[in-house]
Length: 301
Image (cartoon, rainbow, N blue to C red; front, side):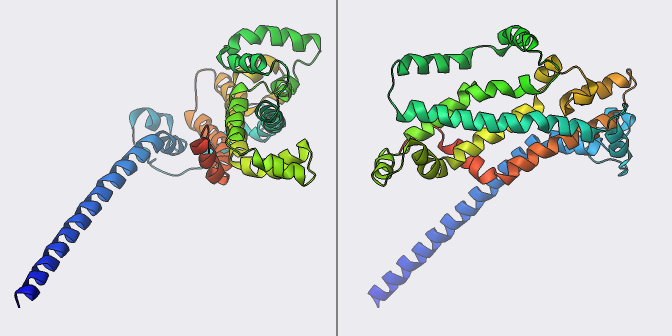
C-alpha cells in the first residue's frame, strides 16, 4: 500500500510538472507570436497605408493616418493609368521589362560563370584578380556615371536600353559573384570528380551537377537584380531621353511634373501600388528558394 501511494504521489507530481511546462510553453508561444504579429504589421503598415491612400482624396491623405478610406473608388487607378501624356502606363511597364529582363538574365549567366571559374579552377593571377573583383564592391557607382555616359555616347547608344543592361554581360555585379562563390565552395569537389569519371566536361559539370544544387542562390541573384532594376531611377534618367522609352520609375516622376504642383496624389499612389506588383509577385513566386538561398549564403558544409 505504501509503495502504491508513493507511486501515485510521484505520478501526480509528474502530471503537475507537465501541466506547468505546457502552460509555460503556451504562454511563451502566445507572447512570441504576438510580438511577431505586431512587428509584421509595423513593417507592412507603409504598404497597407499606400494601398488605402490610393482610394483617398488629397484632404483625406493629409489629415488621416488611418489606412481605411471612406469609400472604395477605382477612378484613381483608371485615370492614373492613362497618364497625362499620349502613352499609358502599359507602355512604361513594357519599356521597363525591355531592359530589366535582359539585365537579370545576363547578370545570372555572367555571375555564375565567373563564380564557377574562381571557385573551381586554378589559373595565373587568380588571387590578385579575385581581390580586384571584390574591391569593386567598395567602388562608389557615382564615379562611373560620367565615364560610362561618354563611352555610350561615343558608341551612339544613348536613348536606348543597351547601356542599362550591357555592362552586366561582364559580371560587373561583384556582390552576386561573391555570393555564388561561397555557394560553390560549399559543394564538395568530389561531385566534380565523380562527374569527370562519367565523362562530363567542365561545362556539363556546371549545368548538370552544380546548377541544380545552386538553384536557391541563382534564384536569389535573379530576384535581387529584378527588384533593384525595377526600382532604378538614376540609370534610366541618365540614358533615356524619349518619353516613349521611359520606364515606370521615370513615368511616376513625370506624372508629378505634369500636374505642375497641383498633385492628385491618389493617382500617383495608385500607380506606385501597381509598380510594386511585379516585384511582389516575383518574390512570392520564388520565396522558398529565395529564403533558402539567403539563409545558407556563405555557409560551408
